[in-house]
Length: 567
Image (tube, rainbow, N blue to C red; front, side, top):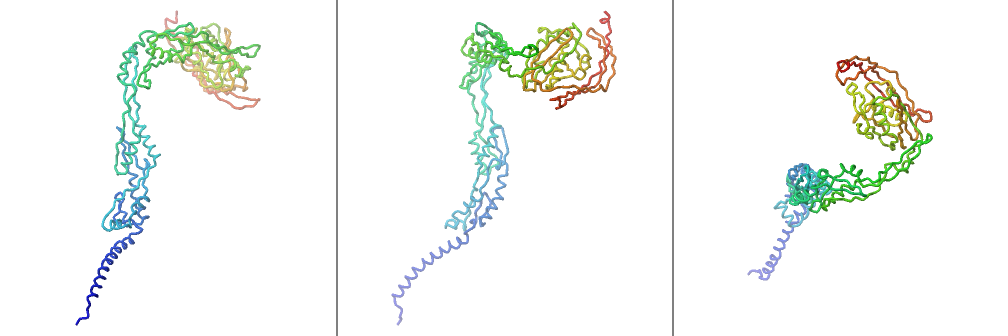
């Protein structure tokens, strides 16, 4: 008889039922825990970043690998296309980079969770790299591109060809949308593309073509249909139709319309003179008992020439043909107060040259002396003889007289004034002022000091010198039938002495024969070279020296033959 009891069997069965699930749970725990322990501290297998396999690496090794591989991405050129403009730049130049540390952290995030372990054992994962952007660098790089692409819209306008108004039609501009460009460039970089097209927008002009055409056929025509009259203080001056058309334009008013604009610079001086009620008078100087005294200035009355252009434009806009300009005070160039501060108190230099009496050239010498007598050169001002005197012509009292041109004596209006330039050059020399431009004569002229003289013609060669002192310089001129004198009055700074070398490299006189009605005989003179030193002294001590090196050609002995000379 068996001793097996049914109650024991039931107990064993219950034990098995408890044990089997427990074992299953244990197996599951071990199936997760063992890989989790093995995977802890490394990038999960099967992990790739931008195609770079970093699975199974330590974080440090993964970062090092990504630093090396992703560096190539930021050095590969990216082509930016903006309209017709194509420009290659590297992502580094645009301010892009990668944060490999943050990328590895993302790759390891959730690696030891059940899902992460399962993915590591049975799958793979692509992790996008973390992109960094230097916003300032990106903005600067795109700003340079935008500047090269940018083109302002051309606003329409109306101009004149003769008296006929011509429409200049508007034209759209273009501009790069910087915000869109920044987004597009970043997306292209993140996606690994090699080029990106950027949005270049058309920027419309404010004035439409229809408005330009309308103004051209209406106001554009009536504006120059008749002269316009300016009045001020009972005086009148007309602006002719031709003058109106030459200075008038219709330009954008910034609000979609056209407004008249008038450039009066060409006609303003003459109009200002015509409407001048009382001319201003500069402060001047007179010499009384060997001392300079200030003659007070006086303001004048006239129109503000800068207001002429806007006033004409206003009249055109209003359809008026008469413009009243207010009279304003016209200040002198040099006021009494300014003259008193100039330090004009003593004679600082004087020079006289001699000439034969009564030749036509003497008339020119006297005329230029009269023009410049009393002229004040301001501190720091560069005096230009041609700039102050202007072109010599018969209308201003100059006459024909001989001058040197192309190695010959010829007659020309204003000839002979080089003697005045030479006289003034010596006043500059002994006054201690800065020589800016002077040219010695081609041939030596015996009435001038060798190496210390200057020719002049119009427009070149000019004679220029700079008042490099803090004081004004008063120019006083005087003359007789046989001499011209130039004096400078200011505050004395230097005692000036002159030393000259002996003449050297002497050239013999050539003999020439010429003919024709314009032939003027030449007496001939040796050519030579000479050096002159200007010695600056203060309190008896030499403070500096300045050398002038002059080379004179030999003047030919020219004989004029022919029937014209035998008469």
